[in-house]
Length: 208
Image 1 (tube, one colour):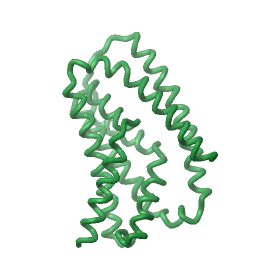
Image 2 (tube, helix red, strand yellow):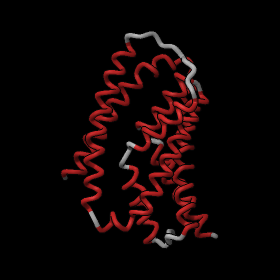
Image 3 (tube, rainbow, N blue to C red):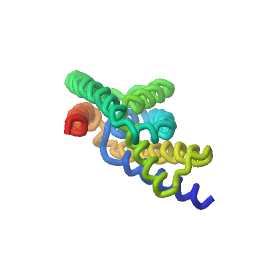
């Protein structure tokens, strides 16, 4: 029981702190909360958490395979490279278009926010090698024993830590009412720059 509690705390903490730095998912959570209301921002974060749990399940299943096959990681990074490039262009042109349009807070269907959260989290392919690596480290420390209970705890903790980080972004930016207009207009530029940064980092990891 103590081992499972330790596994949960460590995994939760790793997922939470990994999601805290400004990134594609948490900035989109904040942006959704600003433009469509806090409820939609939280639903977006829930979609992200669900997708992360699916990725974590996959990461657990392939952790041993990844440790033996570097080619698999390279394929994932190549796919991520293309996606980051496309998203950088998309957010840049979306930002230019948004600067020409008045800012309007609109009511959006929560199902759409959830689907968007799932989609953006799923295309973040770097999450799979991250959780696979984390899983491998925990296994070497005998925190992860590849039992059903261990896997469930690991997956739930990863999703919970991610969701808390998303919620804090939604909650924090919703408090900044006097800055919502500026944040909404500039967030797409921030996301585009972030995609460029992730593109460069992925290139470095892929070709170093």
